[in-house]
Length: 116
Image 1 (cartoon, rainbow, N blue to C red):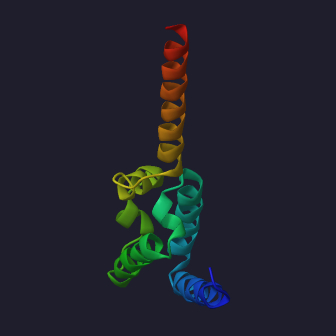
Image 2: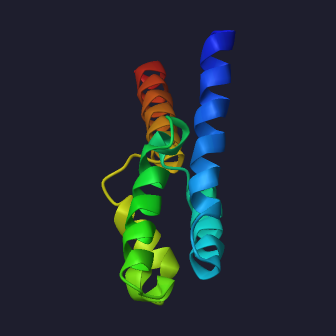
């Protein structure tokens, strides 16, 4: 990664966070919790720019413009809202699970080969 890419990434992130700060307070609170949740759950794409998070801001800005409260947009179960957003996304947990399964399969194959 070049220094220019790092600078551009930081610039993009600052612009992204400025959009968050422009939202009504209730939306900001829920957005920050969603962001924390997604960083912990770990969809791989969350670290590739701000696409998913920008989409959430777009949705929130639209809801706010229509005069809706944030929970009218997300529903009362915000974690389920997040899970639905990333249901088709690969997570770091998925990658780790695949890795563990591959290692187990390799170890079992080696054990079987040695016993012959």
